[in-house]
Length: 192
Ligand code: URA
Image (cartoon, rainbow, N blue to C red; front, side):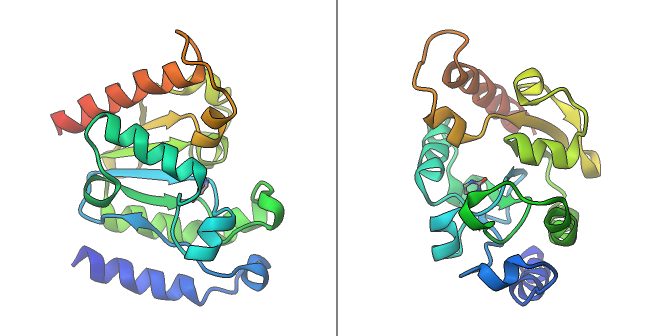
């Protein structure tokens, strides 16, 4: 049922010509993971490998994301639905433009309306700004719970690309903070 509803939105998205990214994309990247999940992660936009394969988070950042979930016993295939704020790759991986985000928003909104997740993770600055404008920035609000759509709990977390650029695991480092956040997320997930 959920899958069928999502499939209708996906088919519309695969044929989308609403912004100029339609001309440069190889593949539309609609979603990954499982629709049977209480947990949705929203990333930024497809990168090179995602554009090639038509799946979100399959490059280096995605591999790290899988490891982070695995650390607390969550698997991408069985426990998480993954999507992005926009579904086509911006050239040279630049930030999505406001008009691209606006054009693509209907697909993200439809995904959330169909799934009605209990927990939404806003992965990185772009996803954060799509839901919580003027929040003060990812470093300030990561790890905090906010009220999200459809009665969900929403938490901003660091983007794995940022963690790849920051190697330290010292107390207070981005990787250490992510470890605190993923434990808190798993606790909330187990309580659902
Ligand atoms: N970064 C993102 O935000 N999303 C992807 O799908 C891949 C990399």
